[in-house]
Amino acid sequence: MTVLLMLGLFHLSTGEAAAGIKQNKVKPIGLLDIKRMINKGDCPLFIVAMAAWCAPCRDELPMMQKLHEKYAGKGLKIVGVSLDMGGPAMIQPLVDQMRLTFPVYWGGEKVVREYKISGIPLLLIAREGEIVEKILGSRPENVLEEKIQSLFDQCGKKN
Image (cartoon, rainbow, N blue to C red; front, side, top):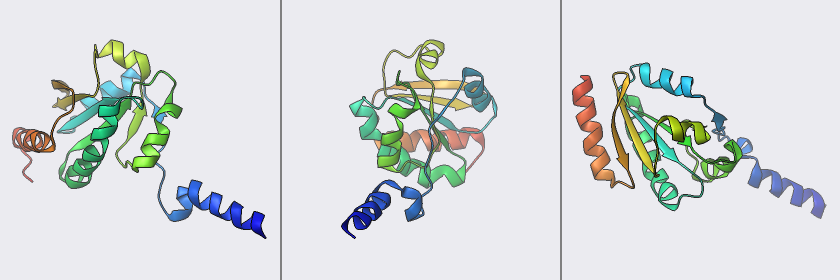
């Protein structure tokens, strides 16, 4: 009986699907897929370059989740790209722990080279098919809110 109870508790603690929460599975993404995402014309697009070992990255993820929840329905798209060298498995526990619902992909070293990333967290802002701004380091929420409003105005989308 005790063993069954322990197995049940283990299943509930590890099986988010049992709680009705859809797991946000981190998948690899290629450079061509990132370019397609940028060229898709979604306006605006935030690509958050991050890594599981990066404390400032972990600190800002709840804010990115909050912005995603607030603005996704109004046209903002936030996408995380992990630069961890160990593959998707390195960032997946963090995505699960923080219950991130915006897409998170693993890009690794090829993304670092292609986008000349020298530090993280790094926010790549894309609009109308091109990266229009790179913001290195942590940013306060009010700065990002102002940036989002500006991008909506430039894209012709009012919130």
